[in-house]
Image (cartoon, rainbow, N blue to C red; front, side, top):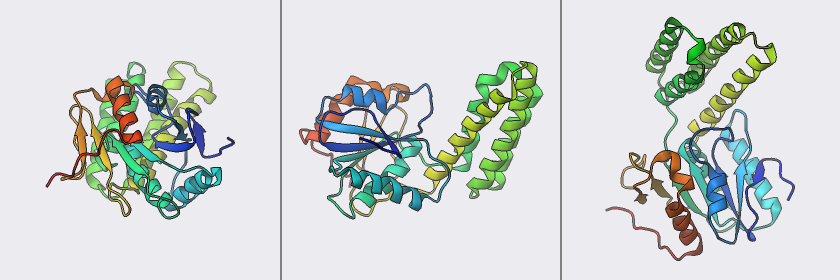
Length: 263
């Protein structure tokens, strides 16, 4: 299966299950762990690294490639910010075939505050090479710009990317790293911001189906009154937990009925 926008996680059956999440590394488990643990006759796919929007054009390309494979889509899965992309993919698929079930794991919206949080989290790995003043200034910038322009996510992301680049330049100099490595560090963070901005164009409302939110300990559906399952599992382990693997398998096969929406 030659794909441009998707990469194959498993090939266990004819039906496709596309998964939406950031393709970069992180401490939390990803859809690779889930695909390996779900013994169901489906083929899991994962979105490849994508650049900036507009989201509608991206979704058209993603779904067109799935359609070209010529196999039905049984479900669409999204994790964290990627949940806001999964809904759009599922709706687009439903234009030409049966609406796939949509499972959203620890769904969170992209906001100015969340961009600021990701910026400060990204700096933790370089904290040992940055001064206290540099870290304090960076935190202050993220908080100030998120508060000043809460609805202008591209402006917030551009400011955070610029400051991150400045700080990585300082880190590279202190560690005598070649310019190539500084560029790689900056490019990785910029790609993540582009992904979050793309997710920020999405949402959790759907035209063609009612999604199911699967929430780990401490998480709640971002939309009140949603259909949801709450699990006593930590966020980082959600997609690698055997209980979740069994739940997903049962949902995909129909052995587990979907819970009703709260009244």
